[in-house]
Image (cartoon, rainbow, N blue to C red; front, side):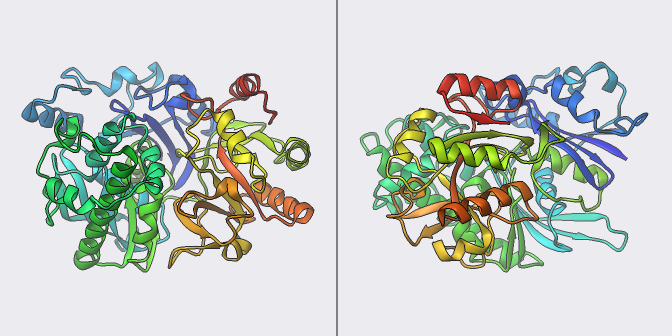
Length: 495
């Protein structure tokens, strides 16, 4: 059965096309339109997906990631000023002509998140945690998930919180308070936290949320104007991060207490907070976070729910394909690294998720004291923001102290303390940590060959890795995007 999972209409539109258990294609509308967090479906993206179906096959079913009429009900009840779901909302209006008669199933928003993690995991049974800003009404949910004797996934919601009690909305409110863009710049707030003092965290938490995760204010429209008006932005970031980690840990403790498994699957946009993930990994036996846990990734959960069984998850390289019939350009990348220390890579299938993992990456030698400033200048980012290392997995423990229970980190979901920060200043944050991507031959053969060659030639088993994008725009998708990046920044991009 060919199923098109769709997430659209609010922010970060995405699709996933599955053929039985195989994931054929998954991508983001923003990569095609060039508009960050684009909420609209992109027809070119859908066309690229369906071209991968065998001849004479078509999409049998569309599975939408939420129930739009339930979202609308919440908006009517709460009197929200911003109402992205219209009364005349219709998925059909987003679809190309050839899908107008395809049947549509509608899924529960948080259940789609849970399925995106459980049905891509290796677990037979797990407890699923979903934490985001808001679904239809849910803001936090915990599910027992397992496969029955016929291999069908079954879910039972065992605990949750609903609007307006929301960890995700709280973090976005602090994002806005420090002058950043909510629903966009939360990752910058996370980076700012290392430069601040969290001494006020207990006072702030007491004013905002109690021990039962009940919030004292509806933070959907931000923090109250009078709240911490004169506080330093970096201190606010540090406090927000500390409080968020405490609240997530409470949810994990609740999941372990109530759930039927100590194998945890974690999803929702808050799962992108890799600093918090370090603590969460210590609380359970095994933790699986699909590398696109936000709303675009819920398109995969919607497809998974409609299919009903485990998906054949292998890797996140599921998007648009550049030079599909050529090998990863190791020689060219190495030559440019030796010559200029910095090079762009736009090759193979684009990553599904917000983080570049070697196919749409700007990579650099992490050893020079000047490299961080050079790359920040190219990316036109704030100077305090760190970069991530990608490292041969067999050497990760030689260079980083990883969190307990974390033996690999292929999707930059955890941080490690760098053992030699003086040697690798470009990839070490203010607090001495790095958001680590480990690489194995099975995960990405070409990237593994690159790192092996780099190590043999330099005795350095890692490279700096950041996303290949022009500031304010999504990651490079096509060759023309790569050419635009090269022209804008005068940095060679290898395709």
